[in-house]
Image: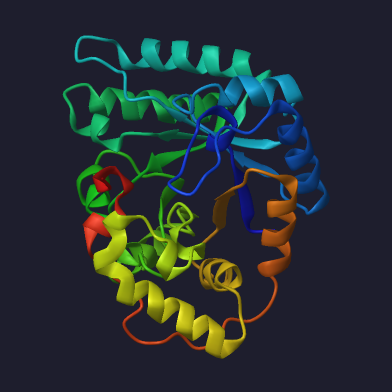
Length: 285
């Protein structure tokens, strides 16, 4: 099972098309559905509000957990001591003694004066067994150009979708595969936009309406749902180790698992874009 369950919705009100933070009861149901579907990996982060605490209350010691260090390391702090403290608090919230993956939420930390020491601390945490794998969460493949000489990650988490293929077109997807680095794709649905109708988009996205219309027309012609198209595009790529999806209900997760099965029809031309005003949620207004 290449799907991993994202948990940002468990701790924050997240996503342009979302309905708010998930209740504790629904978290229980989502995790039960995930387990029944063969999903064994949870993606979380210290910065995801109460996500780690919510997961710890449910009990996740038997899951493969990937979490992320926050961007709070100051220039005069010792990276090893800072990371050790953040991990201890994270483990306490999660109710675990180790995690499968530890990523940097802001890889630019590696470029600061104490960046190499932070890379060393992460490597030592892996060697000690506290974490199984180390890596980075990026927004742009350009970040890898800068951090690669400092840290060779076991995992790179990055956006990848029908619209956003920068990790592939940059050459980094193939390069990471050659290096033995796992690529975990996120933003498969671009925070839900790729599942919305072209006529229901918020006003900010009006200038990209032709792109959304093209997606809708192609899926209609092929007799495939937009959900299935988004999932199969990502999960069908052998260079992608995991596709991280977030849900608000157990029913949504069941629909995702079912839609992921099957073949993807040939893609139409001009379905992807490099326009960062669309691809980076931080720029949305």
